[in-house]
Image (cartoon, rainbow, N blue to C red):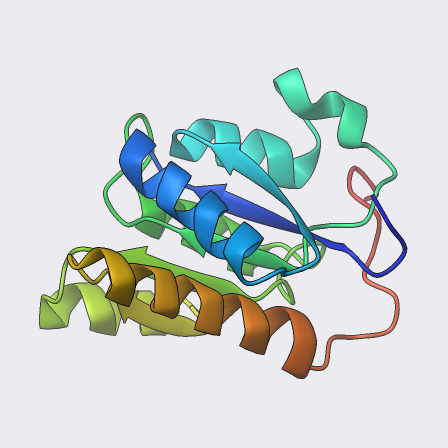
Length: 154
């Protein structure tokens, strides 16, 4: 990873959306390493450096989490709840990227501390623009705390 690249965690179970997001990051030359978790349990393991992701212990957390709402094993709201409840991960920007535009999903996400809620566009080009805009804002324009705690630290 180059010094100016950032890590992004994409929590998405739809392989097509994963590929579209990868393509959007590449096409827009966003200096980011995109990690993918296919369900909520894997996302928490990655974020907290446990289980199959214990190798992340001592590493900085990702600069951004793009989180789907409807996930296998543990849904996006529960992932969000746990991330925002823990001081080690609380300041990581989390963007809910979902097909749901239901008011209750939006309200609950914001109530749990999501930084942004974006409804996934169904059109290919609109989806690409949305992901590129999110990446640009959260990775290049958004100011983050100087030293987030390393993963696996108490």
